[in-house]
Length: 269
Image 1 (cartoon, rainbow, N blue to C red):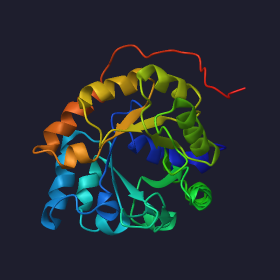
Image 2: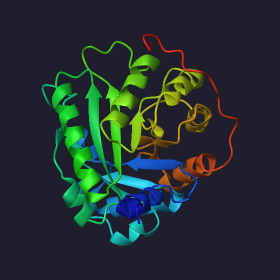
Image 3: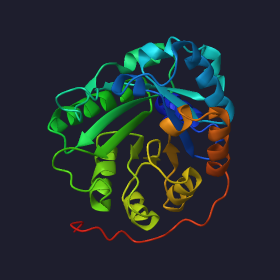
């Protein structure tokens, strides 16, 4: 009986990995708030259907957009409601505010929620406060929390600095996140150092970068990351289902052995 209070969260966490292997292919479609529409309004539901058919573990959308997706789409993939917002037109493009609550996500039948925090932004302190508040609500409602924590802002010189990334993922863990999404380091070896410091699973963002996506996913897995979050490179693809399927097969299959390195981050003493 002692484990009963955490059963609801455990069930939701299992749904965030539809193959049951603890790996995650998340597809964020929240870009319509930050930068503009991802597709035509009458195409959005079909886009989600393609993404789910391709094998995505979860789709991330804002609460309002979820109303325009058939509930049946989430019979296989998980629904994650994004609670943060900000646009590229704001005086501070790195600012994020809360525009949703955990209780709303619960009523919608969501399997998780996500919050965006930019470390190094002028509004960093308020974003951290929001993350802490959402984490507390997630504890009350047994809701998994994905923290998207990035080194971004006027004081960040290198957003791929492994020491800075290690700081970011540990902020997420310390404030109560169950999963953390961040930027990939410059190399798989450096990312392995980052992952080694994190007590929660690390996912990397791969939606906006160039280069071969399969090679990117392989490097992330070799570094010990538990998954990837890819948006643009799927919803801008001419065949989203096929693009997702290719990555899903790679992510949920055996890849080259994981890199093992002892953390050697500056300032870690």
